[in-house]
Image (cartoon, rainbow, N blue to C red):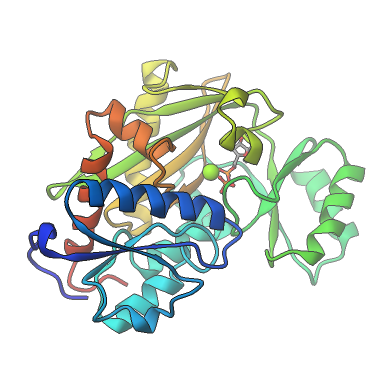
Amino acid sequence: MITTTVPDIDTLRIGVLCGGDSPERPGSIASGEHASKALADAGLTTDLIDIADTPLSALPGRIDVALLGLHGLHGEDGKVQGALEVAGLPYTGSGVLASALGMHKPTFKNLLTHDRVDTPRWVVIRPEVSIESTLSVVRHTLGYPVFVKPSSGGGSLAAGIAHDEAALRRMIEATNCDPYSEYMVEEYVQGIPCTVGLIEVDGRLVTLPVHDVESKNEFYDYEAKHNPDLRIEHCPSILPAPTTETMKYVARRVFAMIGAHGVLRVDFMAAANGRVTVLECNTLPGLSQRGNLATMAKAGGISYPALMKHLVRTAFTKPAYLP
Ligand SMILES: Nc1ncnc2c1ncn2[C@@H]1O[C@H](COP(=O)(O)OP(=O)(O)O)[C@@H](O)[C@H]1O
Ligand SMILES: [Mg+2]
């Protein structure tokens, strides 16, 4: 995609893409509806499009730019980005490669490890490896408890803690019949889940104030992410400055490491002993008005409508060739 100057976005037809067939579809619908309403209220021309009903091939001619409110499989993983590249339609956020790298947690963690950025130790559950062998590797390399999650998941869906080997065995056996083709087991890190948002504003990457959360559930699970009564959030974070400054620094390194563009949210665990470890990154973070990105932007002095406008402009600031 060759894009040099940022057009006046007031004159554009902005397609807000959401929905699709991802397990994170409900969150995506919220992202799309909130983004679309904020832009329309600001006088911009928007078109809310559920990609489950509308083929991407129908978009050129109907819209001038795609604001991606997609999350998870088939939306955040580079596939839609690739289709839009081929169609010649500008779209917000990262390109194909960064999206794919950000989506597949084990590949992303390999990059982190190569660059000596702390991330919990992990083992990928491979279908061709027997459960006995996997349990043996976990026993000798991670110990218990462990955290189990899909390699390409999101929203804490299908994730959980295994306190012992019997629980892990049951979880591995249950992974056969769901949409995620691969799971991973991670060293369990006791701590406070934190996130750092980055957004491009007028050609400059802005690091937003750190967000931390205490979940009333066993971890920051799907329920705690959707029920404000089950969590206590702070933004800016109340963690010590050396901890939050480390996270901000590492978040920017992650952005460069995967070759992200426009926007990124990096999720961390801040352990009680001061350890700061990267869990994952989100190339298409949730866009709901009460979501983490909007909360961090607000704490950084960026209103929700302004955040959405900055996001639209990221579609026009990509380098001439972005892999
Ligand atoms: N290794 C881990 N140790 C302890 N808790 C974890 C670990 N990995 C994830 N979690 C918990 O699960 C939540 C979601 O994990 P994350 O890796 O961010 O995946 P998702 O893509 O589902 O958001 C985290 O905020 C945290 O509460
Ligand atoms: Mg996360």
